[in-house]
Every structure is written in C-alpha cells, then in structure tokens.
Length: 431
Ligand SMILES: [Fe+2]
Image (tube, rainbow, N blue to C red; front, top):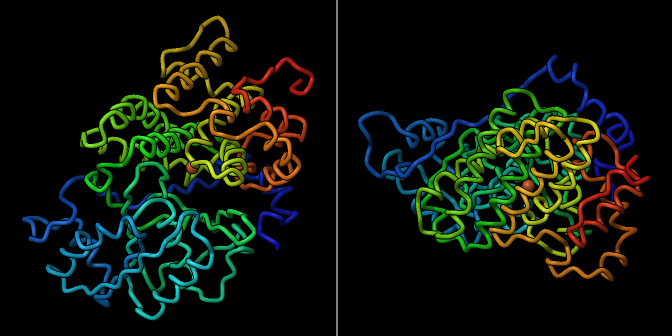
C-alpha cells in the first residue's frame, strides 16, 4: 500500500526545507484554538456576560451539532450537550465508536453519520484517538473524495466550509485539542499522521474542564504526562522551533516537572489535574507549529510493533534524541539552565545532568528507562530489527529531526535503548 510518506520529493526535500532557518522566519504561521480552561464551561444557566457556551453556539447556525467520542468518554456527553440544548435549542447526534489509534474504517463510519446529520459544529470528546477520528471524519465530511493515505501535507485541506470543530480532552497528554494533525491507522498496521499545508486541523475551540480527567488511573496519568513532556522537549528542540514556541515549551516543561508527580500520586486532587491539562494543551502548541522529533519516529515504530503506550515510548527515546541532537545544536543547554543542572565548565556534563534529571523523573513515575522494562525481549527486538530499521525513517517525525540517522546509528539507538544504556557518542558510529 502506498502512503504520502513514501513520496520521493517529500522524503528528499521535505526534511531540509522544514529545517531551513531562513524559511522559518520568512513565514511564521502560529495556529492556536480559542482556549477555555476551568470548572464552569458547561453551565445550564446563562451568565452575566457571554461565556464559552454562547461563543461556541454562535458558530452553530443550523442548530445541529455532532459529538464524536468513545465508549469511555461518552459518559460526559450529556454534560456537554445540556447547556447547548437548554440555552440555544441545539440538537445533537452522538457517535461513540472511536477506537484506539483511529482505524480508517471507524473514521469512514463516523464520516457517514456526520454526512447524514449535516451539523455545522462538531465536538471531539475524549482522548487523542477520539480527536483524531473527529478530525479525519470532519475532513471526509467537507471533502468526501479525499484519500487520507495519499494526502500530501503540501496540499491545503480547505476545511470549515461546512463545520467547525470544538475539542474537549478527557486525558492530559496528546495535545490533540490544539494540534494540526490527525493520526490514523490502516489495516496493514501503519499509523499515518494526516495534515495539510497549514495546520488547519487545529480545532476552533479547546475546552479544558479538569473534572473530565479526574480518576484517571496512575499509569495513564504517567503515560499521558510523559507524552506531554516529550512534546514540550521535542517542540523546544525542533529545528523549526522559534522563540514563540520555545517560550511556551519551556514553561510547559517546568509545569510538568512540578505538577505531574502530584497528579500521579492522587488522581482526585483537582489542582494538579487542571495544571496538567493546561500543560498538555500548551505542549501541543509547539508540536502543532514545529512538528515533533525523532523521539516520536523511534517511539511510533517500537510502540506500534509491541503495543506499548505511546507516551511511555516517546519519553523513553527523548534522552536518545537529546544525545543525537547535541551533535549539531547546543540548544539543550537552555533546558539545563532552566532545570538548574548546567555545568558551566562542561557541555557534555550538562547534557549528562539533564538526561539524569529526566530519567530520575521517569523513575519517580514508574516509567521504564529501557525497552526490557516494558516486556520486550532481545529476541523480539532482533527478530524485527530489519522491519524496525526500514519503517522508522518513513515516520514523519523523522523529517523534523536535525538530520537523517543512518542505519548503523539507528540500530545502535535501539540496541542501547533495550538496556536503557546511553549512546557512546565517542564511538566510530557517531563520529
Ligand atoms: Fe505524542
């Protein structure tokens, strides 16, 4: 099966163009939704001043709105619908069949329901997969003939002729509520990010109600928080990252170090929940505007193959990303300064301190440092190594890194990651 990631021109020129500094400042789009955060986003009574309900209902002229959700988050659908029904007479249809990894057949089924109901407002309610499903189904509603697998990211999506999108996250990690990408999976196991020439998939509204994330089990809190931390570090380190996105990424990293341990320790403590929901949203902004990094290319391949949580995988590879990027940029020193681990006499020591800081943080959340801690065996890894080495460079996360890793370097990362051992940057492979 052919995908847009196999296009020769994109693979050859896409990466260098994304990294070109002169392009970064020639055109600097910065896409964010209108964001509301708080406990009072779904009130049945009108307020003294117009609130989120009024502002969003204004976009729903047909008085028909559609909710895309999954079997877990559907429990919040009545809370979401109630004020729109009572205060603005909007009618709803709910589709609650979103599946993990947003399989293409579920996306098409969702799009068929949307086409029949003809809403001009779509709510995406749930975690990353529900939002990805909603975004891709929204595109098929707007343009029924689009083929998602070969849709080049150089082509505009031309959304918003029929509907607008409001995202309501029920986990704190993917940043999908502010990101311009929908990750869809296909029957052959490929997970494909779909995006346009501009981040048009960035929702029109993001509604952050921390009560929707209360009670998340600690492992999910850690895994989704790990994803958010990886996005913030990726977003800070990406070649395309500019000062606007770096500022957001830095604050986000600080917030995650402060609040994730508290959210992990007590799932019902509402303040850490709110802060992590905001941090995950903030981490999604540089992700939407700068792209991810090689952590996501490496993590997608291994996580997809061995069915390991996305956030757990990408944070595991962040330390390797920092080592690899340190060959070509010293931007990581700003993170060392921020986290108080800079060694003024040695950049090498500073990097080691930064990695140690991140790994200690991971350990405090019971997140694995090495692949062997996730249940993967060396036999599993070696048996699949050819496929892993072939698939990783086709992941779009690879384009957003600083340079192409060769096959020996990639293999060295995967084998080192098995034990959780850091790379020997003085070895021949890395010189
Ligand atoms: Fe991610």
